[in-house]
Image (cartoon, rainbow over all chains, first blue to last red; front, side, top):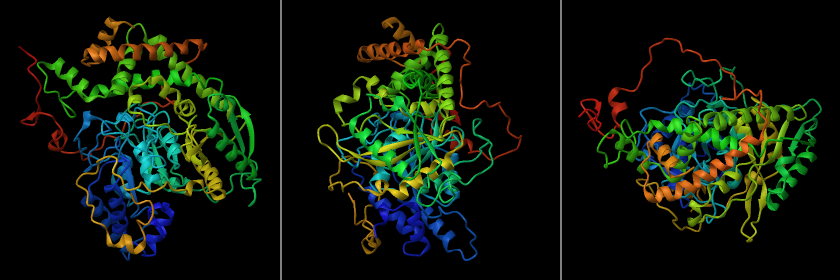
Length: 535
Length: 93
């Protein structure tokens, strides 16, 4: 049995049966992370991880235990824009090199309280700004399906690690698609919850009216478990929603509609296909996989109908005005005084600020700060920032109108397959990268829950592949449980989410995870833990 | 967007620019802003700006004592500190 590519549900059974202990499980993933050939992980701390694993095992072994958490002893990797006590948090930026948070993010604390074991920190685009993980100060992250290609971004390290069996689950954050797009490109399942579901306390802020954290895992059922632990009201986050706790897994078994039956579990469910998501910009291999997925969903009983999201194209300029505006404000905290990089070239306070920020921030972050400062500046505020906020309202209204006709909106996550890592391309026209976000930005602007579900593979025009394709499901606000139920029905009927990338041929592409234990664990061989995909 | 405007933006953003930065950033930022002009195609007369996905009112937390990280823990990441204070270059001549 190959546990490293198992779902959390399968690992739960392995732990409960005593087939493996929490410590052995953590050690096996630590060994894999120490040999990470993808640049997916930025920091591990085996002693700290194993201490958490031992504490979890004690919880499991306690005879008086009335533990109801399904997550006790299960490992997870955290995106590096989420602060963790003990592990460094860099947000993928030189600005925060060596930074150690004095507290855990609320979602980290919640997962720890549920007994989850932190494996370390995942690579990401600097301050979560990017769609390819090419903007990390700590090196690119590579797609396990083709190491010459990007894993998507900004949660690229999280997605690559889960896809490659370096972690069974990871956290991500999504501001304009940063959970969904890398999940799609790496062939895993990820959900961006409704804005306000998961506390932003302890997220390194990018664009505060859009940022939302969520789970990335190997199945919708696993995401439901994780979201149950991550979501919930937090008084420390002024935008955290005070709603009654709910079980996000309640539609994994329960019927999604009154007319559904065992053979046609999606009968009575109306899926809206936005015309604008199926235009000429959608590449042929992605289109083919999506069409195939839609046919499968219809076989399961769902009804597909066309809907309109007429302002889809405007979501790009709206997002790339609003997000940089909020970023320019949020990132003003990095001043070289209280934490973060301080320039050695500082004669006075102004040069301290200007040089520290110039040296600490990478090119994409500087571009967005300058654009954000421009659209908020005197004389341009109304024309750009306020206008973008008005367009944002119209885009949100378009979604509301579409949901009058359907239960869910479905379509592609990304117009293309994962593209090639081109060193010279890192500084290419940023607009080209922004266009790739066209199908994910709308749900972000409207604050809607949206997820990516593996739905097939395609080959690039140069024949490269197979490369994963993700189906996007967008729901009404607070409809995560139903979305996860829909995705689960699809995953019961298909096995795209269970496919594993080829082993990485043992070559070390990047150096990372220094200080890690690389001693082979005796148990791994015994249980066949590292039998597959071990890089 | 011209070089003078870029310089003004850099000052407002507290970013030092090298000549190379100026050469790279001027066309990139100009292109992004030219593209953002596309927003003006949309008729928005009478539309209320949407600052946030939810219409939330600001709420206050209960006034309860809680334990926060110690001063030492909060100062541990300071690039330069002395006597429990952040050190900055001289600001008064």
